[in-house]
Image (tube, rainbow, N blue to C red; front, side):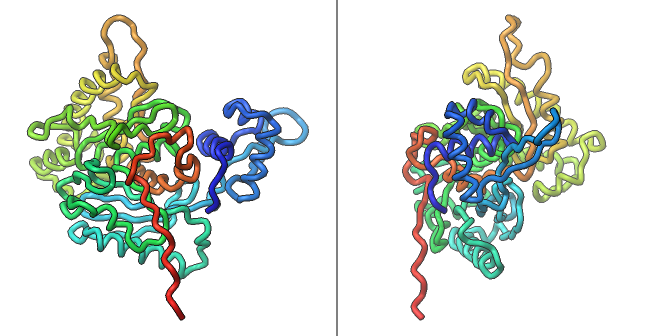
Length: 389
């Protein structure tokens, strides 16, 4: 897909997050002249990235025609690691997952995952899918960066990702640009672009997966930190004690005789009808309320978004436990951040992973939004040469 100019990225980013949106509003939010907005919008129309909608409400006369993203204008492949599987899916520009495939976690070697990605893309190409609309592959890694993408510290469930060079082997032979972030950062991007963070430029994202992690969106962009690990709030909850993590939740449920193999199975439980789950949410909520208050005062974000792998109902229950009158209440009347549940729920990981190529499409390397382009976090591989016939 052809690179966009800086101003085209600004406009498309705003349409993506605020659309449907009027051209006049775009001019205000992007600080561009109306004439520039008109020209840029036409260029994005020509590239089939945006479409007009029709708003017939309001005054008489011609209806207004706000613009929004064209879902089929771009696609990306997302790869997300779960407790017992590696999930891969095709998402469009609106965040809808169109196709999916799964690999068992005990087979999650870099070589097997790379083969799954290659086979998945080959399956797309066997249909009438337009490869030209495919921006790339995003991989949400279950771990933190040690030396950029050259080496990560993965979750214990995925020991095959620990060796140096394993992340690069995930991308071998794919023939598309490959982008990686840790799973918390990927999910935060999904929320920023398509979820609870769409209209919020500064928020802390709390990722409840196998462990507990976090990510920061500051000034509308993902803030990575020097080594790509900004937002590691899990260190506030020692591993040798009860903590608000998925692994801890599974262990608590197992002690009560409720065996849960992986996160999707949590959907069959309801908070009010499952006393062990309700007790865990009360305890985990209290832990998060205490520790996130300290983090919130250091960062002073507009919001804290609670997300990850838990179902929406459980995330909402956790938010109710965190967002009490005691949260960030030092008795002096300081403003406090909003506490929001993810709107994407368990889809956030896949949507976030697929968003990584979209972010590159919107922001571009070296743009003002991405002035800390860490070596190794974007793995660009040229398309392999066609075999000789």
